[in-house]
Length: 63
Image 1 (cartoon, rainbow, N blue to C red):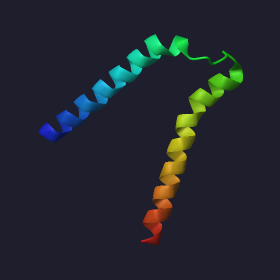
Image 2 (tube, rainbow, N blue to C red):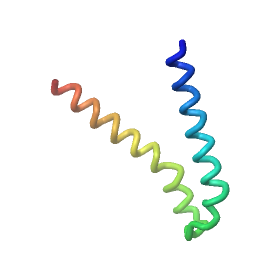
Image 3 (cartoon, rainbow, N blue to C red):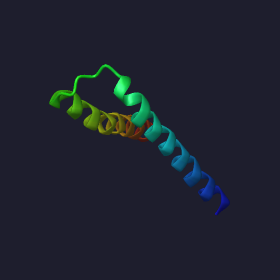
């Protein structure tokens, strides 16, 4: 139980830090507000996760 609570707290703190960075440092990034950029920002994490899971699946399948 203690291990799970520690994990949840770590995820919560990391989320809070990322949120603060987006809120205060985000406006200073030179990214044009276009539809293409918004689509890339939304879909890129999903694509990265899919690639990582496929790579892990292939590695697991070979062993």
